[in-house]
Length: 426
Image (cartoon, rainbow, N blue to C red; front, top):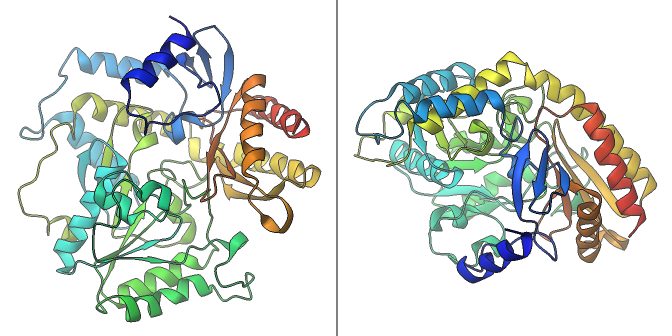
């Protein structure tokens, strides 16, 4: 087998909506730790981690051993029967999440986790209307894509779900009001009240938001944002859902979950991606009273799958054993400082933002015009030199850098050197 054959079969047998990076897509054969190899044996340093999913490294031995043991013990049973790994992971999530969050519902993905949270909020409040954010991403189903604030990710479903209103994103680099922080008095958050008064019935079921907007290009809100926004939402009867699919489990540094940096306790949180280091998983956790409002029969055939649950437990145990949130804070600060040095060197980098190991660089030309062609060239350059990075933002001009959280300063030095050379070659 070789890359050309894999790519040819991908084109022939896979839906064309499954798009790939690079002019010649990279067909990955194997991975170990922070590195992957293609079918020709070329080695790449992975600084995107399967879209923040390979949270502690490819084929991490301790996780693989737990998965193998579980496969030989019990591979599947469905949620019609309680299983030990599922209840143990639920207990662990209740222990490490903030506030009064306690009861979980397990699914296969972040899309399903967000759908579960929305339905639970609607059942608990008796209201259907939802506030989401522009530039957000919440999944690929009809409901989740309607929550999403990107036209390109809504195109297939269209605007099919009524009662969803999108508030202005806390995108300081491109403020929708033309203001500057902090003199703006966090206008983007305060505008939610007028949004509710003018575009809803005056009562809402929930406000769903990512602490740092992922697909949106790692848009990072001001420190006051969520305190103000959540206060307004609760004033009008709504719950606050923190979508932690990308920011959860130490990724932002110091804290276990992104929203903890803003000092707000959510009524629900949703997870996926890094929770099980690559095994398919989704989870919704809620306060007891919200969870207990969901009494109608429901099932997720593969939600709570013992193998994925065991992988989730093993991943969290590894993170606790190695104190990864603190490690992420240290290496994340080091990485961000290095990216800021690149910003000083290259005018193409308009802003460096994010925290921990969820960092973005927005590439721009004059007057903040999105540098769309330049980021494509950067991707080709970094690939040739052996570095994998991610891309996002409404215009596709934001570099997303999210290595596995086991990254060390030596890996960062290697990555930054490649980035420096790749920017110089543009």
